[in-house]
Image (cartoon, rainbow, N blue to C red; front, side, top):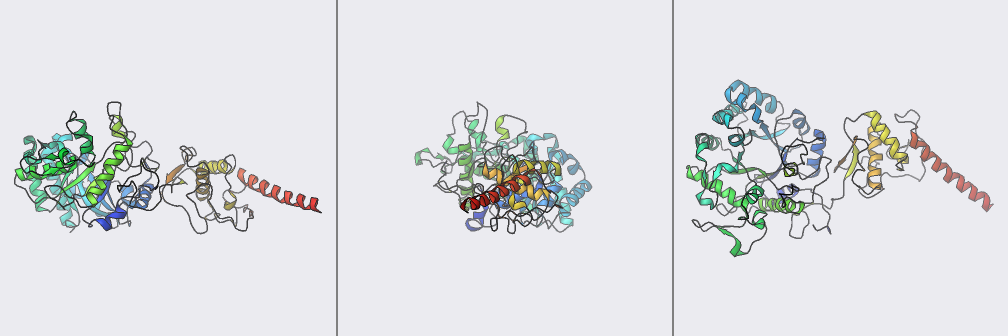
Length: 499
């Protein structure tokens, strides 16, 4: 990975407004199977810092929806698979679900899509017979609230329901699911919704026994004689992703549907895997996602539909370390749970991002809701044993206000984190600190992204701390005081010698 131009993930959607129409986007899935899931406000802070404007939730978590309110971020909420049977068997249950999870948050939270289940036809086949009913009931509830035009309803499907996917022109749907798919496609067509598909070239590559070249799966440039050619249409395919999208279009054509747009609800590449998953690497994950973002936002389209881009949600925002399955299942994320990027996306051929130069702009802050006593202990340690210069926190100093433990701890934690070169483990403080890309600077208290430069020391004099402060006279106060006193005494001694 090139590092001559350090850029953070600061993603794609800083560019989407320039390179793509608003109806074409790159979004991110937000999974929650983490041992230490960030607080919703921290998740939203990361989204805003990275200018991510489209997210898909696998549920309709109230805390996340409240945190997303008034951000402008477009949100796809989901009816979890375990709720499909209830929603699909009762119009009242569906209406209550919409009232509780959509209407109570809209329009403050910009909900644009409801995903009814996830890969239901393959993951929950017993619910397949009532899947279309579930979509219809949800849509009816939206219609009753005059929200049917603002909010689309669909269901993400696994690409495995498409058989004989290459050449794409020969693709067709698995006959066992056609009794559900035909009514589903009629519903999508009548409501102007999307055919949602989860597309994973990684799995196609892994299961091909060497037939699919790695470069073809990763969107890497291919020589003309290496491109895959559909013998029926003579269309040339340079990547698996496009071939799968066109296979979906041809499969719909096979059952006489031609005007339903495809939306990719999941796609990505794992950054780590087991010994039998040698191509689950950071470099391949970076290559795939970087090329995918460029491919979508450049509106390249597919060979069957050139110039018609397919909006795509990247799987996923965070690594999910407690997710079941092989190691690769836990490592699809763009970020670790503390907000640090797993890798730095490359959005130009030179290896740099379409973004500001902010790859090192990470900060260590007190976790929201952390125990006050634990924060105080961390603050005392950082300003004492940790040798952080905490003089700016004293009364009259630039970081004294707001005068509370959380704000003072954030200053000290971040100063220590930067003083230690942002090394792994230096933003923990027994679990009450977390890394963020949002600059916590406020007023005259300036936090720097470079090492050891927090605060603004006015006139070079350490002011006295108010004895009524919530953190009055902690251990570190005496360190600051004694250092200042020694400087004064040293100056006096020098003066006496000169006399």
